[in-house]
Structure formats: structure tokens, C-alpha cells
Length: 290
View 1 (cartoon, rainbow, N blue to C red):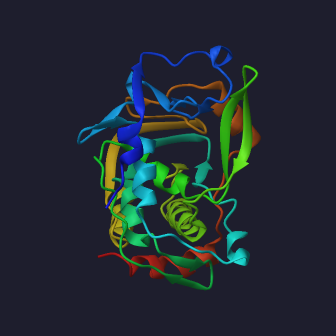
View 2 (tube, rainbow, N blue to C red):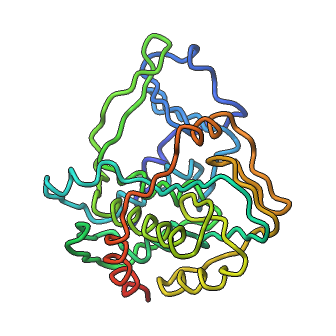
């Protein structure tokens, strides 16, 4: 049973734009999608407000209450230290591909959560033990909330608040911490990314989607199906990859951001897994599918 009492009790105010930082009083908690005042009032921009049953809040707010309803996880310290750097995979090989297709995983995060479960016991190269599938209860369109499940379960968290017109961030204890879950989710995504690059000749891969040669698309989708995942073709045609987040496939072109160009020049590739580890993990994840 999910307890939404804190959402019902909150004085939620919907605004067009959040106020400037320098105008906020001391003690305001600054979130990515909302501000919480010391008296309990919460400001939410119109674009991030979501409604669920009789409540209005952000996707991350609803998701945190869902995570609070799940069983608490205790982690032994040696394992805890293993998972601090877990993150989503990224691979960029600048260049062109004449006949390409962009394929991503349909509902990637919820699908992977369904494989791993929440009460997972996992140490890379040693063992994988999972419990019941984790089913995200909110609408499929809540992309921010779906990805926040794994973000909210990270061991390291910070709390940002206003002091003297500036944002001050301090480490915070995360009662939702579940490092083995975080590690297995990101290792599963990294394993898929490594196969995509090394076996299926992917030129660009970010988190759950990438640019592949058209002739190999069905083989890659069959690989995803062996894991209980669904591959989805989104765009096809001539492809050009410049940098992280800067690419074109057919008529689709990503938005150009200077930060992405700089990241690509500096070297933004990140797949935290080698071939041996991927080969060890693949059969153990594939046997989890329903």
C-alpha cells in the first residue's frame, strides 16, 4: 500500500516559472522540479505537475512515495563500496553510416526493473539473486518518474537548500538506498550496450538506444527479445554522428548543445564492463525474463 499522506498534506502551488534563486528565503529546499518552503508549501512549475487519483505533485514525488512502500534493503559495506560509480552506458564513434536505423528499448527502465526486481542480491562476477519483479505503478508517459526509480535508490544523495540567496548542497542519508539494485540495473544496460557495440556494430549508443546498420536491425532486436525486452525502430536513413547527443538519422536531428560537443571532444565513452563480464551476466539476466 503506497502512503501518499505527505502529498495530500502538502500545500501545492502550481506556477508558470519557479522564482529566481536570489529571491528565495533561507531554508527553501531546492529540487530539480520543485521548491519546498519551510512551512510545507511546495511550488511546482506547470510543465512538471502530474495528477494521480485526487493528488497533484511531480513525477519524482510520486515515485519516492512508491519506493518508500517497498521493502527496506540492508547492504553489507564491502558491497556498498562496489556500486558508487554505477551509471548508464555511453558510446560515441563519430562518423557516417549510409543505411542506418535508430533502435531503442521500449519502456527500457520499467522493463529492466521487471527483470531485476527490487530485493536483489548482486555482486558482479559472483552471483545474481532476485525477488519479485518491480512493477512501476504510474502511467507509462511518466518518463522522468520511471528513470528516477534507479536514481532515487542510489547510495549517495545530496540535499540542496537556500542560504543567503545561494544554493548550498550537503550529503544526505538516503533511506531508499539499494546499491545492488542500482548496480544490476546499470550493469544490465551496460551489458546490452557492449553487445550492441562489439557484436551488432552500433556507431552510437546512449543508455538504451543507438544507431545500427539497417541490415543488422532484426538480429539486434532478436538479441533484446532473448532478454525479454522489446526493440523499437524509430528513425532510419543516412546517419551522421558528431558527438554525445549530437547526431542525425534520416530526417531526425538532435538539438545541438555546446556541452555535448565539448563532452565528445574530451572523450565521453563510458561502458563500465568488459567482454568477459558481459558474457557472464548475459545468461543470468536472460533466464530472469517471464
